[in-house]
Amino acid sequence: MKDIIALGEALVDLKLRNEKLSMHAGGSVLNFSFYAEQAGAKVKFIGTIGDDFLADLINEELLSLNSKLEPIRIKQNTTLVLIKRAGREFIIYRGADRLLTEGTIEKYWEKAKIVHTSAFALSLPPAREAIFSALVRAKKEGALISIDPNYRKNLWEKWGASKDVLLKAISMADYVKPSMEDARELFGAKSPNEALGYFRKLGVRNVILSMGEKGVIALDEEENIISVPAEKTRVVELTGAGDSLFGTIMAGISQGDSLKEAIERGIKTASKVVASPRNLIKI
Image 1 (cartoon, rainbow, N blue to C red):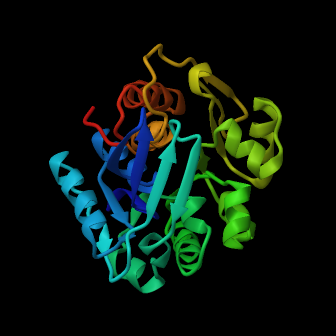
Image 2 (cartoon, rainbow, N blue to C red):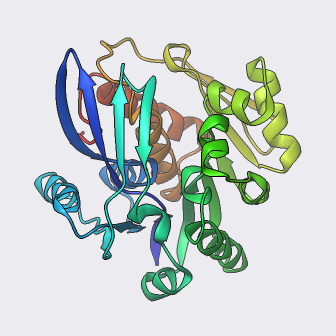
């Protein structure tokens, strides 16, 4: 049995910073998986990349970091994201990531303590339906469900995507980690308490709200509020920070940490990630 199975996107981030371009492996679910693995969890990543040099870059970067994660290659173009201004502006060219199918998931499926995915992964077919079916299966098998609700209304409208499946998936979740921006985009939340409340109303057992330099505030299943401050650090790049936080947290949960202990570990990891221009770094 795996500690975590992660279903969703692997892609390449093409970043423009200080008039210089750089390319790195990325994608919320791949980032999450990498940091969960770094934190000691046994992780299987199930997600599709293309048959091109961008896919080669992803595999080479994972290999250079001694990661055991193996994205699945298919005959398509690898998804590419162009990022400007530390993740504040971006353009997404969807490709192989959205073409994850039920047959592919079935082929690589294992029972796990936790099954994870993201809003991005649940945005477009056939991956949307395939991943949702896998979440239903995981629930029946007794796994915990974790979801990154990284929803962006404008993007989804451009794609012609409905958030109905996402909201159904979130309602099954044991853990979600929204940012305030996620909560505003999904529900119009104006404060941390509102954000926590919206996710609880959907049925989420544990809500972990990341607030950047203000740290993390969480609502656990027993209605306890957990507040953990951020660590002071030099911020170079925000892309991947939330994924590293959440991946480390869920690795901790899979290993028996309390939610507070897991969040404290996650913040230590995220503080190192934001100080690097790369999405994936060895901790």
